[in-house]
Structures are given as C-alpha cells and as structure tokens.
Image (tube, rainbow, N blue to C red; front, side, top):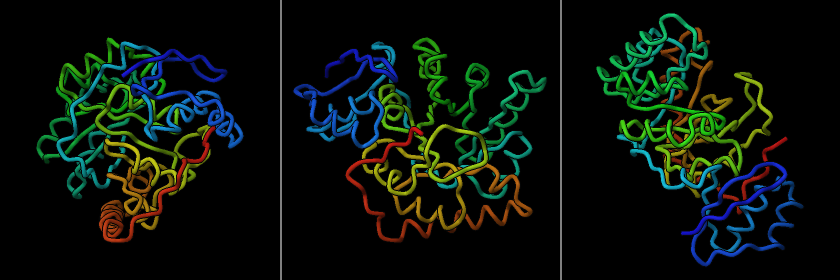
Length: 290
C-alpha cells in the first residue's frame, strides 16, 4: 500500500491507496461535473479503476491505526441519550446499543454519569458508547467511544492511540466521501452515515443522503454502518433493507409520549427490513456538501 499527500481547495491530507492504483484526470473532471468537491473528486479518480475507497487522513502516521471490532456487529436499534437515567430506561426496554451524549463538558456530575452508565451497560450486556468525553470514558473502562469528524483532528495520533490501547471500540460520524475515507484510514469499529433524512437534532451543512447513499455505503464498507437522522418506523425498515447494521435515533425515543412503545415499534421495523428485498445499490453516492 502507498500513501500520497494531496492538497485541494477543500481539504489536504494523505491518501492511502493500493499498489498499482493510478490517478485518472478524466475521472476527476467527471466527478467535478457531478458536483463533487475537489478532495472527493480526487478520491473518486483514485478509485475509478479499483472501485475501492482509499483511506484519507491529515496525518500519514494515523493510516496505520486500528480499533477493536464490535462484540456484536448487529447493533440493532441504537438510542442516543443524555443521562444515565435514560441509559437505564432504554436498556430496561430491550435496547442493547446506547450512546451517552452529554454535550456540556462542564457538567458537575459528568464523570458520575459516565461511570453509572458504564456499570448499567455491563449489567445488561449492552454496547455503550460515550460521545466525545474519551479520556473519562477510557479511565472508567468504557466499552466504546463515539467521535465526530472534527474530533479526529483534535485527538490526533496520541488521543486515538490511547483509545485503541485501552481496547476501547470507536465509532465515527461521516457525511460524505472524504469523511468516510478519513474514518476508514484509522479502521474504526463502526461508521455512522448521515444525515440519511432531514433532522432537527442539529444544524448541519449537509444534504440528506437518502436511502440510495446508505445502500451504497453499506455495500462498500467492511465495517458496520449505522444509519442516523430523521428515522421513524418506515425509514428504519428501509435502512435495514439498505444493509445498515443499526438505526440510530434520539428524539424519536426521548421525546416520545411512550418511549418503550416506540422502541418496540422501531425494533420490529428493523427486523422486518432484514426480511425484505435488498435496496438497489447505485454506482455512486450522490454529493452531500451543500
């Protein structure tokens, strides 16, 4: 495998590509004509012959990283909550993949919330991921950590290596070709793809990917794919048809009048999707940078 440094108008970094893989200027221009940003056009030119996604990261040293695989790659319904109370509630309702997402790093009982949630996950045999607060997470023996794209650069080689050395699983959010390639470069335990559908959870500069993009990523990636954003029962069924290993939700459960009933409905919807015909896979994912 080789690595080449690339600098474009949108991003710079090292692209990890297979021996014999060549850059295609016509493929680059075709990708640009389809609306892809420079770094994505470069990636697609690289994969025009191999049909494989190259790794892309800001640091060449990070190309050699790898994280532990998931204990259970069939994550099912993945509920994102903001307290240990919610962690316990969804675990009691039968959820076995949970993310504790507390955005306020100054919260006085943050470590206690993380510690309690980890203990609950172990009690129920669940896979719990701590969002962002990776240092506390690995100090308290967390099963996994979830980070965003910006966190990859903030943590750098040292932070990511510390997570890996503890045997902690890692999930990474992605929204487009170059972000998927950045995630692939460090071999995470799973990749979250979104927003699949419009969501009010937070403002994002991304065009919703839709089921076609989700099916594409599920067919291309050799790690479990988590589908996130705008999910309801019908969309959860479709996500499972696309090949998603998991459907992640936030307000669909936490804002529901009867969260336990919604959990049962979504779990049944995911199970149904696995029995239906596979969603057609497009030749390319569409551009998602607005």
